Length: 109
Image (cartoon, rainbow, N blue to C red; front, side, top):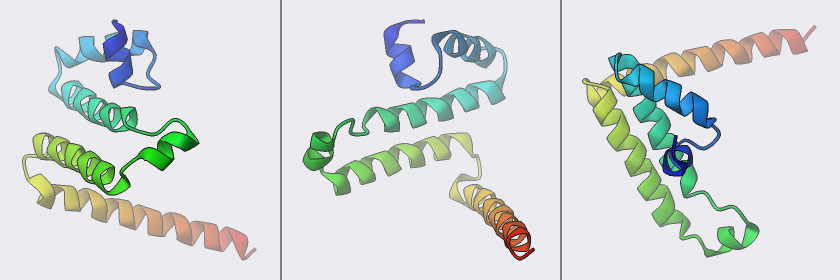
């Protein structure tokens, strides 16, 4: 896999990038997963890597551009658009509430 592909998928070893790409050519779910990984990689590629870079970043602009990248990806992945995405958010909220409840029970013992 070339260096450009590895940079689009920070933290994913080149051999795994190749495997993901191979699977994506034969399976729409793998293709969608690769699209999501690519969007996350794009966002991570903009992350500052030094304290000086943090000082120089236009954070409002960066946040807006990265949220737009994520929104475009969600729009492509979910036929129901943001209404469908909200259902994932609801499930995540319920899961988080369940975890918090379990932690609370453990801590009270």
